[in-house]
Length: 93
Image (tube, rainbow, N blue to C red; front, side, top):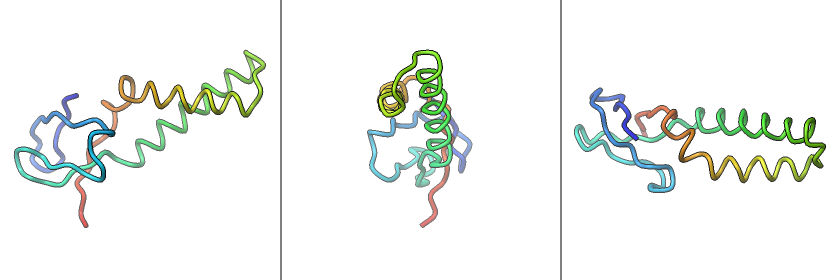
């Protein structure tokens, strides 16, 4: 998953979300980077809302079951569908 470092503007291979705990370091400029939390929550909310609404209205599935199915399916689809779209941000502590 190649993305652009916001500090040095060089293409880097950003690690997956499960590969680091809080942040990671750009191999070129040593800037501390992380995936944007706003993007993570936005994509999760949109996916879970859309899938659960479809399950409830089209499939006539119970609301609680639809939410659980949508959340679990987001977890399994996140690495393949969404992580490449998350922006990288520079961490300033």
